Length: 399
Image (cartoon, rainbow, N blue to C red; front, side, top):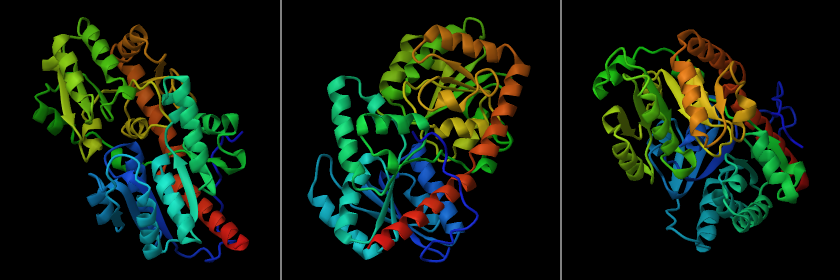
């Protein structure tokens, strides 16, 4: 069972290009805001710095992060697929891939693999590597849906030479019941540009703009406002915490389909004047710098980028013990874990951090040390480059 990261070699001597530059196309549904999309942007940055040609094919639309990806030097293309199943998109994608003529296609999300993987087969001689960023089987709430999800993953996985997962938890899920052949599965954990998140110099500006008093403690989170993220649980916990900590504020960075419901819940709980819904922000590091505690309440996660970013910013982290997080966080040392959906445990966890400044500081310090040592962008990019070259060489040898 694959449960460890792929080691990055010193050099790519077996590469057909002798370790020289290559062309990689990242395939996504869109470059809208989310952890997966920020990982793609960081891989673009690393690829361009290494001298590679990088393109992005968006299945549905370019998205908010497309402009940043373009500034980094990526060639952004969009198929503009409307909602629903559109088999004709495969032919259009094949034409586009033939035009781009990449050495390797790196897809993110099963939908992107389904369309672009088929297109790559039609185009010929394009190596395909896929990364699964979430546990879609765990997200399925009933047996019928789980079986259907496994079937979709199984069919799509046949289109990829390598099937990477961002955590061992996801790897175990996709290999269960032979959904994906174990020989294809590799674990490549996420990495971020840690230097972006150093320092808290901008926090007074963000706090002033939001009307937050300098001495107030700010509990915050970053992520799309969707059911799986369970921000409703955080609102309920915050309402209880106000009884003991009257000056605290709650900062929610992100947007999504649950926003209206969450804003209504804040009003019903009588905490709307203490909760800040700031929507999507292109510079999340500025808002992390305004926080004192970072909380993640998801019912399912792989290896969340927002948690790594909070660590990089030196924040104490509180998180539900789901997916790859249970292996990522050492409870009581690099963060505080609580059982998913357990409101009472969440309240106690936040209380323990707010009431003990030394404990909070130590959590932040230890968390930052972990992310710098183990979850850097350089490490992740090197692992993927090794796999790209290995896959290209193997495919060309077979052909």
